[in-house]
Image (tube, rainbow, N blue to C red; front, side, top):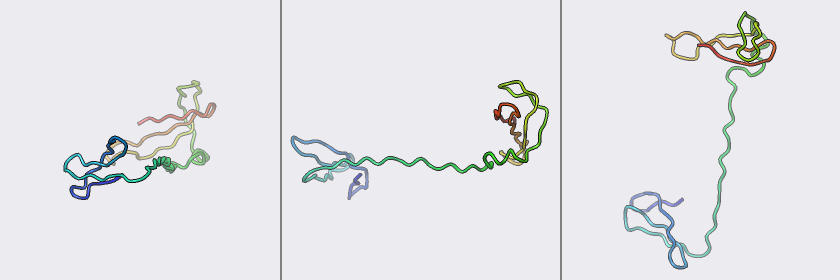
Length: 107
């Protein structure tokens, strides 16, 4: 990417008969490309997600309660509560089915 020296806008690549130049859309500035152009592609790295809830270890010490699993209809689930919104809102309850491991949340 190149930027205009005068107005600092992004320069756009424009093709002429047998050459290329970068031109500014807002002012008369242009930059003539001399020699061979090389195209480089940069892939974005996927951001590593931080497991703020504790991953699989969070369920090791979780209590059990009577809650019906939406997937398998089993009546026991592990649960824990966490404040996920503002302080004047109720806590969110996270569940994990004892039988199938399905996880869901209730506000």
